[in-house]
Structure formats: C-alpha cells, structure tokens
Amino acid sequence: MACKSAKGWLGGGLVVGLMAARSMGGETNPAPAVRPPMVTEALSPLLTAKKGVTNTTPRLALGNLLELRVEALQEWAAGPTNDPRNLVLFVNGIPLRKLYPEEVGTQENRLVYHLRITPDNQDGWDDLLRQPVLQRPVTLSVGLENGGPFPTRYNHANRAVLEIIPSFWGGLCLTLLGSAGLAFLQLARRTNLLRDPDLPAGGGRPPYNLGRVQMALWLFLILGSYSLIWLITGNLDTITGSLLGLMGVSAATALGDAAVDSRKTTEQSEAQALLETERATLRARLAELDRLLGAGTVADAEAGLWRVERAEKQTRLETVEAKLTGVRQAAISPASQGWLRDILSDGEGVTLHRFQIVVWTAVLAVIFVASVYNNLKMPEFSTNLLALMGLSAGTYLGFRFPEK
Image 1 (cartoon, rainbow, N blue to C red):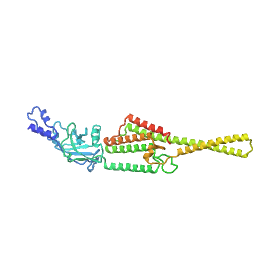
Image 2 (image 1 turned 30 degrees about the vertical axis):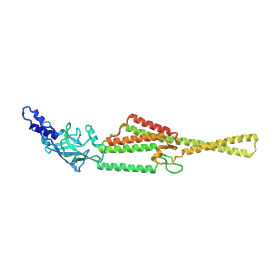
Image 3 (image 1 turned 90 degrees about the vertical axis):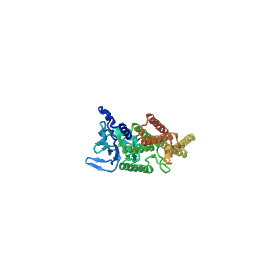
Image 4 (image 1 turned 135 degrees about the vertical axis):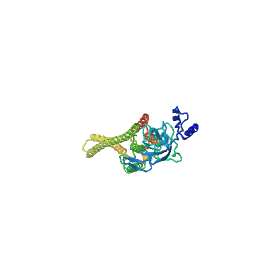
C-alpha cells in the first residue's frame, strides 16, 4: 500500500507525507501520502486600492495582483514540512524565485501573488518578456522553489494570457511617439532641421547633413527603446554608460560638422572681403593710370612706366577676378539629391570617409534594435567599439575640411 501511494505521489509531481512518516520513528506503517495541490482556477488579476477592489478586468500583468485557487492546499499544508508561504509562481514552467504569496488563505485554498520584478526573479521575467508583443499565452502554476510546479489546468492546452505591453499606456506612448515622429519628418522635409544651413544659389533645397541625420537616428532609437522598456518592466534606469558614450560621439560628430561649416563660411567670407578690397584698389589705380595716359602731358619715358604698371595691374585684376569667382562658387551650397546621396557625397561625389561612418552607424543601429527586442535591455557596447566609432567620426571630420 505504501509503495502504491508513493508512486501515485511521484506521478502527481510532489513527494509529501512519506518523509513525514519516516520522521516518526515509533510508527511501523508510513502515513498515507498527501495528494499534491492542483491549480484549478485562476481568478482575474485585481487592481486594488485602500478601499478594496476597484477593477475586476482580467489582467495578468506586471504590477497587478494574481489570485489563485489551489485544490487541496489545506490538506497539503497539513504536512509537517509543507508551508504555503514558500510556494512560488511558475509561468511557462519558469519559477519566479523569491516571489512568495502576499496572502495565504489555507482554508479557502487561496494564494495571492503580487506580480513584480525583483533582483531574484529578474532572469525569469527576462525570459518571459523578451521579444515583446501585446499579449502572450502562458502556462500557470505554483510549486516549491527548488521543485517542480504542481499539476495545473493552465497547461499548454488551456493557457492564461499574460499582458506584456499595457494597452492604455502602450497606446498613449505609441500615439505620443508616433506624433513626435511624424512632426519630426514633416519638419525635416519642410525646414532645414537636418540640412546644411546655406541655401543653394540656383534654387532647390540644401542637402542633408550627415552629422544631423546621425544624431536624429540615435535620438529616436534611444527614445523609443527607453519607452518600450519602461512600459513593460517599469524600469527607469536603463541608460548604460556605453550608450552615453555613443550619444556623445554622435553629438560630437554633429557639433564638429557645424564647426567645420562655420569655419569654412568664415574663411570664405574673409577671403572674399580681401579679394573685393584688392579688386576695388586695382580698379581705382587702373582708372587713374588711364586718365594720366590719356592726358598726354608727360614725357614718353614716364608714360612708358605707367603703361608697364597698367599692364601689371590689369593682369593682377584678372587673377583677383578669377579667385573671387572661385570663392563665390565654393560658398554656393549644392541642391539636395535625396537624403542618402546627400549624406554619402560631398560636392564631387560619394566619398569613402562618409561611406565608412554611415555603414558603422547602420551596423550599430541594427545591433541596438536587436538587443532591445531580444533581451529587453539597452546594449552595452565595448570600449573598443566606442573608440572605433570615435575614430570613424574623427576621420570624417578631418576629411570635411577639404570638401567642397
């Protein structure tokens, strides 16, 4: 009889009573095994307040209370080593460690859990929440932390529904981020938000600026990822040190781009002012020499010197005019040819230093998105990778000086 009872116990997934019987040395017959509890009903997760239940909408989600009915819980708890306060929640067979019941109603066969993330069960929640969707069907049970879950009706054939992204806050964040994204795209198309500041002389829109486009990309990637992680886990401290470094590299690239453009504009303005002053001086001298030569009141020797001087001044004037034309043309911003061609090209075509920084930015962006989606965490980039991005940005800025 004891053998059959022990086999029945093992078949149910819990060994209880047999150990208690062995601990009673004066008994010759082992006590009958206690039937393991079975989760028979999962009530709606309830949002509670000080005055009691305020919402009975079925929501199995982080931050909510989950009430479970466990068949024969009182019978199981009668065992000398069985304590319902040590029962943890199993979701998809994963024990949420140290997540013990907030309330235990042994007589009512009732357990109440507060679904929350703690350092002890962080790994379990990471497995449940990764690759987020709005809702995910899950199996649900309870059991001892170092044992298996009790038999449950919420198995693979009859799953509970775990809400990953809260519908209200998820919709609100999606609306806000979507509105901000659409507004940004409209501003980027209609204004010079992401473009060079100088207007093309021949009409059209200025080209897109690589530094500004890169900065905008990281802004929305980080903002969207931060909002998603907060929506699912409630964690506000998700910005890593390497991410700050990456944002710093991106901001430094945009600032360096602006500094190079400002320096070029200043140098071109100064060069143009000097050339225009010299041109005015040459024209005035040539006019004076023409007047003197036209008067015909000087000796032939002196007139010959004036003619030589006039020829020299005329040659210099032509040189200054040519330089002035080149400076003015260099100051003219080319018209946009599309954002991708704009960020890859300088005034003469696609360049290697621009192609390099665009490729590295795209690779890191893909890694960033994949890490957030698969692990629900901001990625931690290595120091060497950040140094590589800094070197790429420095190379790009260095080549920006001779660009047209």
